[in-house]
Length: 242
Image 1 (cartoon, rainbow, N blue to C red):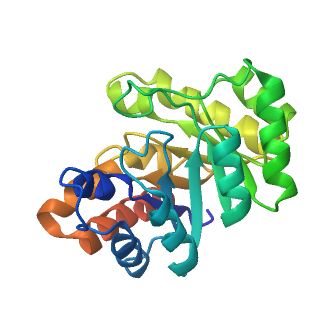
Image 2: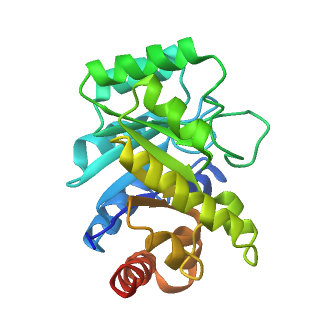
């Protein structure tokens, strides 16, 4: 089975920095450490309210990392213009609400399709791989394909929160298979940890995982390099044994 890419989301390094509004810890330094530990790419979500990652962070990451940059963002004119200027390798359109603690689910890709299609077209025209963060259901996968997205990221939050229920994993497997059959690159993320990543990592059609909070949390105890390495080992073991 092909090696699965691991992108590290460094948002919560910035969350810790913003608690004091200071300079440390630096998300860019974290990104470089993640790369040295084996990360295949770096993900950061530039929110409209700038609650953690700041504009200067994405500027430095885009210019200074040696792997690739995945910019998570809302589908707004402001964010699309930033993406067009920075030209990250990938831009993932995500739902965003000011009152939420973290992203609560996938985009409703059946709503406001004209706006989403226009945003995706702008990203594609700029040579940026367009991705949509969606729930793992057939309608959402087919809608993402119809809108012109090049990739989908399947929301794994329900899977992560319902450990003893096989239904969410089956939904992820079916959605991944459908997406790949339509020619979409298939990614996944949200709520994944070393303990639960195995079954998702073992999905053959899933090319890439985006993982952040659990790695940053683990880094408090073992350091960032080891936290990334632990996740990499868990993913590789699942791929090799499936």
